[in-house]
Amino acid sequence: MISPSEINKNNKKFELENRKFFNRLKKRPPSDIDQEVQLLDELVFSKINCLDCANCCKTISPVFKERDITRLSTHFKMRPAEFTNQFLYLDNEGDYVLKSTPCPFLLADNKCSVYEHRPFACKSYPHTATLPIRKSWELIIKNSAVCPAVYEITSILKKKYK
Ligand code: SF4
Ligand code: SF4
Image 1 (tube, protein in one colour):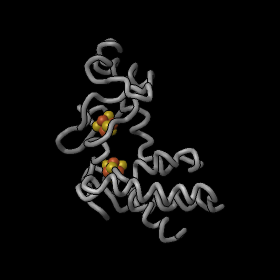
Image 2 (tube, rainbow, N blue to C red):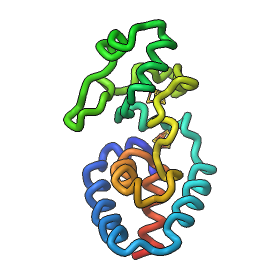
Image 3 (cartoon, helix red, strand yellow):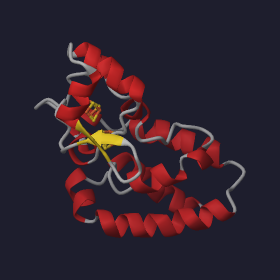
Image 4 (tube, rainbow, N blue to C red):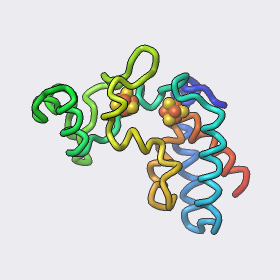
């Protein structure tokens, strides 16, 4: 399995390569693509321990929806506006994201200090288990240059559907 540091060193190149592959696949998606990605998601994640990695929490931000902000600010006994001011900003797409990475809620042992209250985007990351897969293409392309598991899933798909 590729290491997080290897991915981070080559992330632009990997995103470009994988975007080309997925753009071709998207035009004529194989009929078994959902089943295939679901099986690969289970297989690859059975071989990886996210606590040895945490590359997603260290390098990118989840989107914080209103309900995430409400839940987390209640957890911290803060007002939602206070929580937003302290941790978030509005990005170019109009989404609330973290002001800085690594995520301020990530602990030194790679555990999430707000695990029970974490944003929905963290729960569904890296979206290779979100079906139908056609709704997650863009996220999967981006995550294939962040997450070693998605990189691996993509590499297997490239061999199968070359
Ligand atoms: S989801 Fe991917 S990037 Fe995040 S910790 Fe697990 S393997 Fe690493
Ligand atoms: S909230 Fe938790 S799971 Fe989400 S990015 Fe931060 S540390 Fe990772």
